[in-house]
Length: 117
Picture 1 (cartoon, rainbow, N blue to C red):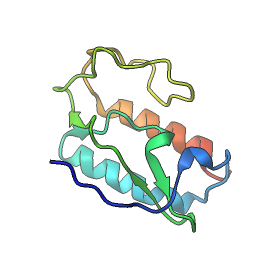
Picture 2 (cartoon, rainbow, N blue to C red; picture 1 turned 30 degrees about the vertical axis):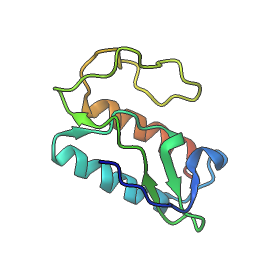
Picture 3 (tube, rainbow, N blue to C red; picture 1 turned 135 degrees about the vertical axis):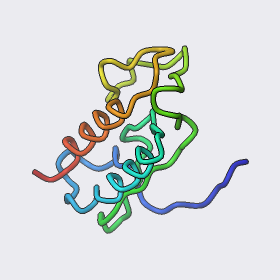
Picture 4 (cartoon, rainbow, N blue to C red; picture 1 turned 90 degrees about the horizontal axis):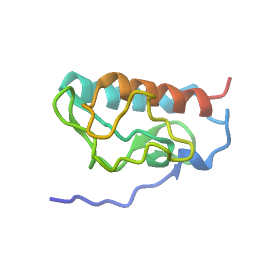
């Protein structure tokens, strides 16, 4: 089943580095922690799939097709590890098991890049 909705906002990657207030990231942490609490991993967390509202007060995740069970599900064999601007952890491997620490690494790279310092 596919659920579709028109979402407002812009991809976080369209904002400049160090351009978003820390408050914009609170919802991302909440969403990720909800996944982890249920033993899931987002597995494809990168700037291109995070939308930030125009007022820059909150962000939301889109594209949940890579979500998998932590320690059980695996990355695809054809995963592109050389995506420009990739936030993938250095230990992500094709057919490797999805891990929570991979998501946490990716989220910290995004926040580090786009949060106002």
